[in-house]
Structures are given as structure tokens and as C-alpha cells.
Image (cartoon, rainbow, N blue to C red; front, side, top):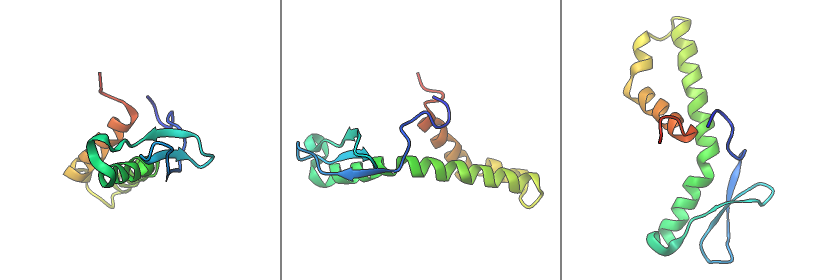
Length: 103
């Protein structure tokens, strides 16, 4: 998957006819259901909110990475900023969200 091939956000949490929360687009199209079977009602609600935030989280990480790269290129930050553990974690999360490096 490359950048922005996922269903565009924002996504929201909505009630479901199955009592488990749904993750939907702003026009109401179903993205997923956070089933309560394994996580219970509270866990399912937390999972639904995390899933609903995914498009904004991805966009925020992509913007952060671009900003740090810009600050390194203009000399405000050192090259080491790109290898900081938080930047490595951000790049790994971006790759995971894009489906890169998975089998």
C-alpha cells in the first residue's frame, strides 16, 4: 500500500446494531466493527476510538517526519534527529500503516 490508498478520514465511532461499536466514515460507510467478544465493552470502545483515529494519526506522523527532515536539511537540527528513537518509531508506524515490509 502506498500513501493515501486507505479509505480517507476522518473516521468516527458509531453505535452498531450488534452492540459493538462501529468505525465509520463521515458519510456513514462502515470501516470496521470493534467486537466486544474478546475485549469486553470497554475494551471494544477503546479499540474503536483508536481505529477511528488512525487516519489522523498517520497524517500527523507523516507531517512530523516531513518537518524533522526539513529542519535537518536547513541545518536547524542535526542529522542525528532522523535516527532518534522516536523518529525511528514514527517511521516504523508509518510503514506498518502503509503495509510496507509486511508479508
